[in-house]
Length: 215
Figure 1: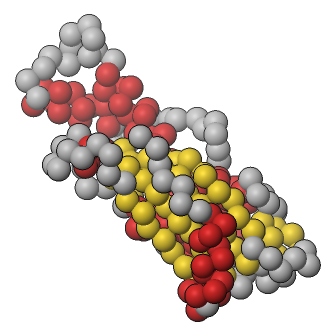
Figure 2: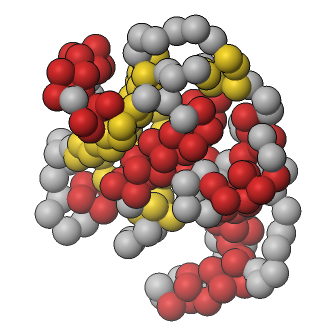
């Protein structure tokens, strides 16, 4: 993949990140110093034994959970794009992910199902879950996450169509607000043949099946 293509995709459709092991380095400004102020504002003492190192732990966790922003798509894909004569649907199903709601910075989690109908190229199967992680590891909403994964696959291999179905549960609904512990949300993004043809769309949806996130 050219550097120009990787740059064009990076912010709107594909900002990728090495997975699963990444090195978390402190950046400026320090999140930890601000977290001490947050802890004080909550009425706690950030200096007491149980909280003394909490700000640094939070910073490390947040850097990891938002590491998708500094992703390198070319490094993620690593040339795993192949010319193949295959014209049937390819599906990677039940891709587990965790993300952070951008409204409350609480987690949401679930499974994503990614399908595409090749034109002349396919992508290495393991790259699809890695692409999902790229977009999940940032401040997100489920709708955007679903669309970004679909658009990235479209731009990488230019298939006849892409279908992405995302099922998730949101802690901002479970722990606060409506406090519904067993409610889930389903979003989809259909591109190309999957948007234009109801028959093709129904075929892929039947292959994915009704696989709701379990309690």
